[in-house]
Image (cartoon, rainbow, N blue to C red; front, side, top):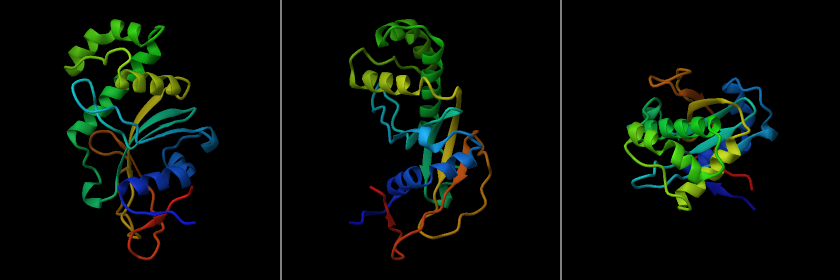
Length: 194
């Protein structure tokens, strides 16, 4: 059986499942791929307390990488403001989670809600809400991974096109890495592992 797919999400999943060692090498990460934690398209909802969806979050013994993926060279350095804000919010959550001594989400919210409101003009999600449960689970999983938190723009050229030379860091501080897929049949489809 073959699983073929097309589009930015498919290319991202392909890069994460077949080329994680190459991605880590480009990031200068000494971590071992087999000890890597990958969240694929983790969503932190939409609405008042929410802040959207990453393409991936990667945890290694060295760092946590917050990943936005792009597959069009016209967008090679363009990170929309809402995505940039999503990164700032998650940096804040992970940093505070790691620095605080708390028993659960309720105590975390009690400790930091006023500071979060001041920084982002929204409140930390309510205890037992889907967003709070998702955030708490994600933060707990990442707690034992590297202390460095980096923003990453994963550029995947469409089809078999060759990528243009890209800077190693874009204008807002995202690390830029590139991986080129091998397409099937000339139409831009790729074969995904399963």
